Amino acid sequence: MDRHVIAAVEAMTPMGVDAGVAALLLAKVDDAGVEGDETAQAVVTCFRQAGATWADLSNDPAEAEALFAARRLSHTALERLGTVLSEDVCVPKSSLPAMLVAVESIAKKHDILIATVAHAGDGNLHPLLITPPGDEPAQARAQVAFAELMTKAIALGGTITGEHGIGLLKRDGLLEELSDPVVSMHRQIKNALDPAGILNPGKVLGPGEVDSPA
Image (tube, rainbow, N blue to C red; front, side, top):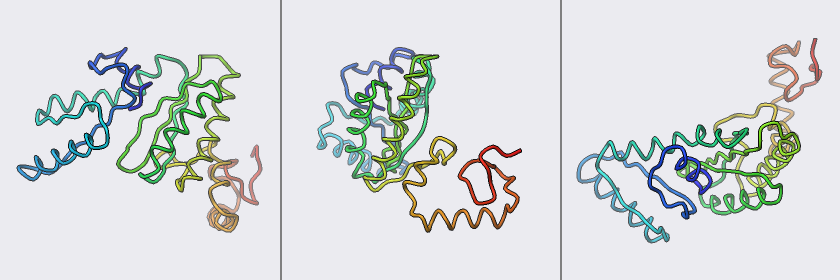
């Protein structure tokens, strides 16, 4: 959870997290018994060695659940701030810091609030672009900003989606990520299975499709 997410969740359901922190990273260990305790302590040690301003562990299921519940409240808390464009990009774990820096830079460039929650363990980030309700210029800037986020993720060796799929928003990003032969292969498979172009038409167009099918 980045600082924007922490602030939004704290405003809705106070967790007691210092508003000045840049991010909150939660880790869960599934090992049981002594082995689990050793693994958890090793994780805490890694956090501290990486420069965490605070790191601790808990064996209390209720306490742990409260922290992860706050993480799950992220989207709801951010919806209180405005219209949320929720998407995802995925990068190698080693590129997470660079991608988070890029998110901040792109947000500033386009004057858009971008709050980020992530599954740090697999490099999957959910940048949530927030605009004032009814502010069409801001919504247009958010679309441009997200296109730049996709380009950055690709440049870092990642992909434009780890969970959400493609959809209309990511059509151009898909064509940017995949080579022409790969796109052609996908279209040939689609057209072999759907020669009339009636299954999910008008998305990533194949030869048998039109933009506005009857």
